[in-house]
Length: 190
Image 1 (cartoon, helix red, strand yellow):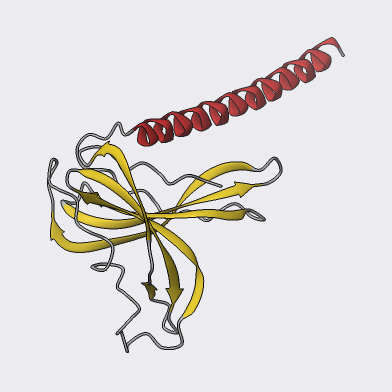
Image 2 (cartoon, rainbow, N blue to C red):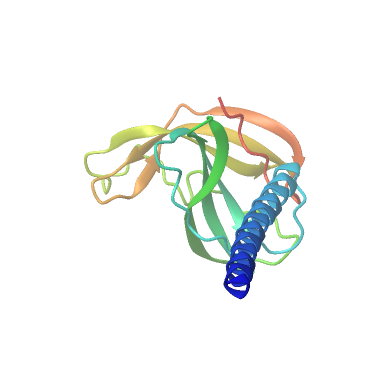
């Protein structure tokens, strides 16, 4: 009987230790992700970026801002990426999700000037007969390198019948004081 109780106690201890270990591991992963995002937001950007997987935004969240920019990735090519910022339940915390990553044909290496996104990768809706039945789906802020500094420009965003997207005017531009050698600053989340 004592041996049986001892074994049950031991099994219970192992179970509790396993749960505590899993919670600690989950907490450490979350902290590491937050630290990485803070570095990106501060512009601590060195060398080519590792490809970030496409993420599904939080269920029940509210889209706040779309942010597109060019990124030199480890494959040696420029990519145009979109990070969307959502207010997520239950507490409305703002979280960033990588929702789009399009590889371009333009090679890159660390220190190269970022490629323009507006009107080169994301084409202008006006005068584009290939975009059938465009539907406005919101706004997008595009960071482009202008005179050595990032400039955030917000455009109306449209989706064509085939799922491709176009931008339109008039845009609203906000210069930043962040050098293009660093990661572009995200737009203000309202």
